Image (tube, rainbow, N blue to C red; front, side, top):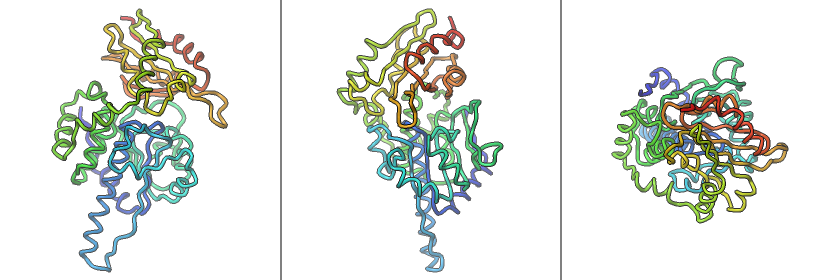
Length: 372
């Protein structure tokens, strides 16, 4: 089913963007293709919108001189190197380790545009900083809102002033595309490239969350706008290191467990194992999907250990869930591992040991998977 944006909300977003002088675009921790694609597509859209207005103002004479605009893109932590080619990526600031530069931008912003998350906690320490600034916020997201405590602007309702929330959408990039088109704004090659990257990566190269015919109509329009889809696939999926390939081989051969009675696979990697293969952000991208290629596996879970950081005495276990067909995993991710996401693609976390995470997984999986 296609997501249809409310015209009044589109007008509200346009008015906020038009009025703002200092815009900060933010996306979630561990940015993936949809996070990077949606944030950068919004960046190009806003910058191009300002450029058009500047031309109009210049034509009207000195008395209509446009205001100086500042647009920043800030991500909570490092993104995978295989996104370094994306248009506008040189504008992205990484908050982790760079708070002295980023905090003033966050504090002085008069508009936040938040892409690919619906809870400020998903952006880590940036969330508290952003919520301390009471300026307007636009949210663009396609994740299901799960239960649990949330930060809020007013103490009730949504924390965002304008909320484009469509769990039925394939990706946040799809919503960004619709927002730009509904604004009657031309999608140029830079915007189209960013949007296609998010569509492609968040659907597993159109393997899941991609049954809507409208999605392929969008893809056709993006190709008409100049997207080189084969080049994008190559840039994202064919640029891995030798260490990454060896790590994947090790994970599948040594660390994959199969629970045949529940058609379930589990892969775990400790921080020491990741260090052995010189792990970098993104090196295990797609690993959780691989067990689903086994004929009798319908569910797949991947756990990755992160070493404790200052102030967090326990390691963090990042957990990815995948499934096929009418076999949702988002409730499991939410109720047991404080996460959520799509029915067939979700995530969660646990602060503790890898053994504790595995024990909790084994204690609960029978409740959440179908014993077919």
